[in-house]
Structures are given as C-alpha cells and as structure tokens.
Length: 289
Image (cartoon, rainbow, N blue to C red; front, top):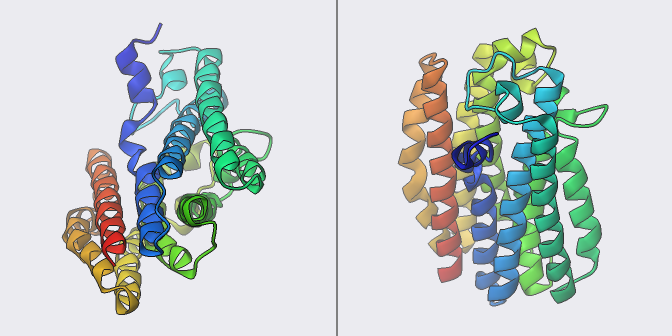
C-alpha cells in the first residue's frame, strides 16, 4: 500500500502552478473589467486544481499500464514503481475528476449551463492525454492541447464565470500564461526524450530532437513577456508581470547549456515557479488596472 506521502507525491503538487496561475490571471482580468465575483473565482480554482490532480493520476495510470514509466528519470510514478496498483490509481483519478465535475456543476449553476459541455470536453481531454486507444500526448499534440485548455479555456473561462462576457482582454492575457505552461510540459518532455523514444511515445520533443527542443523552450519563456508588454500598452499595471522575468534566466541557462537528468528536474521546478510568479503578478496588475 502506498503511504499518504507517496500518494501526495503521485499527485505531483509541483505541477499545481499550471492550475493556479490561469485562474489568478482570469480573475485579474475579471477585476479589470469590474466583474470580480469571489464564489465563482473560488469554484474555478477548485475545478482547475482537481483537474490537474486528476490528469496527474490518470497519466500515472495510463503510462504505467503501457510500461512507459518502466525506466523513468523524473518524479516517482505510483503504478510504474509498483507502489500502488493500477486500479487504486485509476480510482484516485476518478475521485479527482468527480470533485472537478461537482465543482463545475456548481459553477455552471451560478453562470451558464453551457459550461457543462465545456467541462465534459475538459475531462475527456484530460483522460485522453495518455489514456484511451489514441492518446494525443503520444502523437506530439500535447503542447497544443495544453495551450488551449490550460491557457485559453482556463483563463477565458475564469473571466467568463465572473463577468458573463468573452472579453478580448481575457484572450490576450491567456496567451502568456498558456505559453509558460507549455514550457513546463516541454522541459518535462525534454528530460524524457530518450525514454519516450525507446517506448514509442512520440512527444513533440522526440520529433524535434534535443537541440531544437531546447531552443523552442527558451522561446516559450521569452514570448510571454513580449505579450505582457503589448498588453501593458492598454493596461500599464499588467507590466508588473515583468518582475517575474528574471526567474526565467536560471532554467533557460540550464537548458541552453545542455543540462540533463536532475538538472532538467530543477529546470522544471523553476519553470513552475516562474509560471506561478507570472500568474500572481499579472493577475494583481490586471486587478489594479
């Protein structure tokens, strides 16, 4: 039986900035549009966090069943390490999905029942990243889906449930946070290129190769701050997010210098911190604008 500490590790709490940051930015955009509502914002946060945990457990289950995690460099996986059975991890994923679904229903009741369909699509996308007969994460589509769901859907959706509008500002600020979350995935897949290629997992990093993936990762760290500058023309307080830019230097240096293994794990953690800091500062800046 896995210990509580191992279940917590399996939930991969260091990935939670990818759930928290978009909600902060979307809420900041709602405040900028004078539509901030606390209860929908908190429910959106619960949905995002529960979905992230569900995705992590679902990936653990699916990759473990396929044998993808048999020779893993990164954080421990419950199924791959034999710490928990596939059925136990599947149940944990199902419980997290259920929490997200219940919170999503409450959110829909407060805003629009259209969100039920959006939530269903999100759950299907979360499961089929590595699960199902045709997992898109094994076909170099992970980055696209992450940008759409963790960037556009999460930010714009958070703003929508508070303001009831599909505001252009929300779409604009979804871009930098979405790209930073894509960078989290890309550095993770950079670390796993050799192992993924060996088991037939065709991530974008596997297709691009080591050198191109490293350059693309650095681009994903740089472009978001250029977008922030553009947003800052109309909303000057959004430029607060530029204070997070120095946090991009250590992981960029590690990746460009050819870091591997444990060094890339540190770069992954640093990218998560960068994403969270950018989300906090951008959200606060928008709220002040």
